[in-house]
Length: 305
Image (cartoon, rainbow, N blue to C red; front, side, top):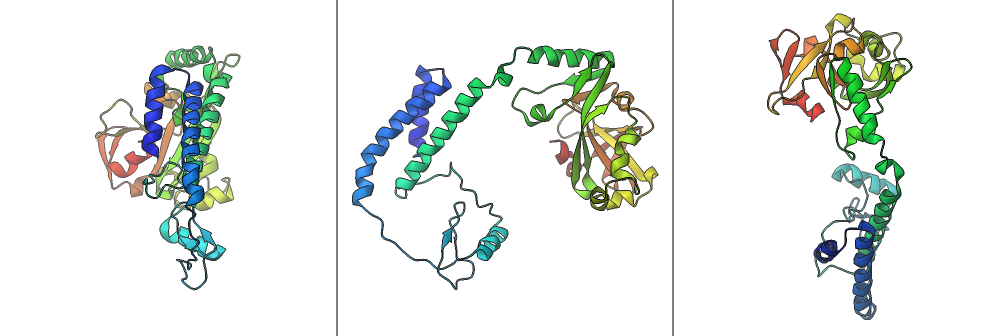
């Protein structure tokens, strides 16, 4: 039972600080729980029932979805039920199970879940990259170099998605940033990540593989058709202004004729730049606050939440 495991964890955590020892203690108690319940499960066998397919209702079921517990008779019915119920077919290991429905399989599943947690905890403890002493030095070095260019670079704690994604580096020999960059095209519901973008590269050149109707990749061109079919003068590049209230989302307009470095000056960057590419003809939901600044309603703000 989930409540039992939680109680075990709280009790053990008060006594021990080592995560591996905590997991090991829980597993020992769980083994005892398994042993006390095995007799009940062995002497109270569950009867076998046959079920009809819950998708077509025509054939006898051969498969039960681990996620939603629906019965299916064939691969076609499995696919239909996934589409109809938006089911991914992956069992939810932490789903609540009442004590009346708790059986041997649930007990085994919980035990294996604890085994997985133990392996992950042990792996994290052995991962040198998570305990590298030079990490803070490298981050501080990046911040100092960015500050010299009037860029306020902020980083997130280890474990955050943007922190893990960020591949930004600074080349000492070239005295140049190589930025991790994310491009968002809201009118096409698309986003792309560009790595190792030199800071002296023009913003227009960075966007050329995505917006140029002739030089862009055919697959990208098709997805961004609304952009590639529009005049380049109708394209606006915006970057969110950080350190503002959540209900007051504002953006700076960037210039394609300037380098990435010049566009980032006097701005706050959290981990890496995220640029929003919009079309002027579709900006009915944008209210101009001042020259070079725009405020969006929530439909665009969700891209940066």
